[in-house]
Image 1 (cartoon, rainbow, N blue to C red):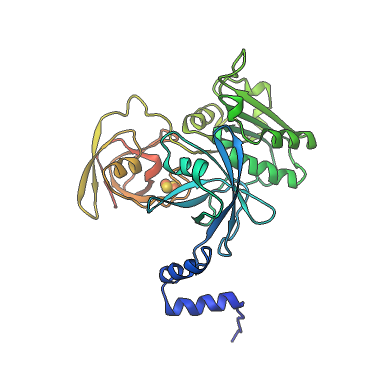
Image 2 (cartoon, protein in one colour):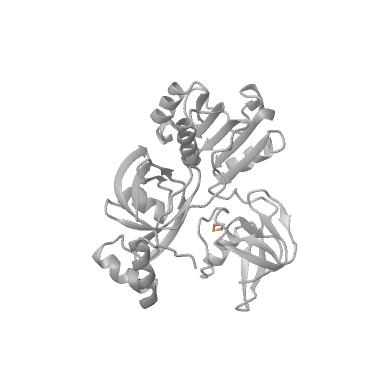
Length: 356
Ligand code: FES
């Protein structure tokens, strides 16, 4: 028989699990130390740094249950506000000392972003899920074209740091859009990286400032900047930005990867209401076509399981038993029975039955 030796903390955790439930253990342990839990990763806010006019970078120190992350990945952060735990997804920059830097922009009406950007103070503790997401540093290959708009810079900044740590193994062009200069984040850091690494070029594009506002992604002559056919493109930003980048570039570049942190605006032909039946409870609700199923169900007072709200973590996936949904990021319709749909990025196009 193989002898398996356990470290002291692992042994204690195993013993504790035999006598109490993780939730009960955490309840009492966090009263002694807010970061002591049996299994749940938590992180304590240790520092706030201004990042732009309306964004702040929070430095978080995770407890020992956090398994670390790759640059470009996301993490779901659980924030307690008025007795409710609200979950939002962020793309942190992993720091060399194991801490995480999360940059948060206050969104108008955004409960969590407003709390984190304006009120959260050092000492506050947040729940973390393990990191997820596919947007990592590409294995050696094509040169890169990074397209960022607004908060979309955060995963790309993490990737740039990781590439810089490898000596910038491929040529990288970063195009970073914001409306105004004071909304840009990490400008000094990006310029310093470009000064250190001649293979990195950084362009800042301001669409509402200057005598000649910068063209948007749909109008910029990208093929005059780089040879698109040789580039691996990573795009990150609001849904409309990512949709424009996808429409313009997919199929024309060596590889296209994108992540949107919001869904694009409602298309004109997706208006009106449909009936959605929730098979497990038998409940029927009227939902707006074009709006995400997650938002629609929440507006009806339901609480479907979810995490990132941007189509990445898969926690909101459920089977669509019948009907047609539209993928809010690609515009594609799908009606295959029993297929999994992600509620946060799928809208009902027809009456639906969901396995919920
Ligand atoms: S909530 Fe993460 S994929 Fe829908």
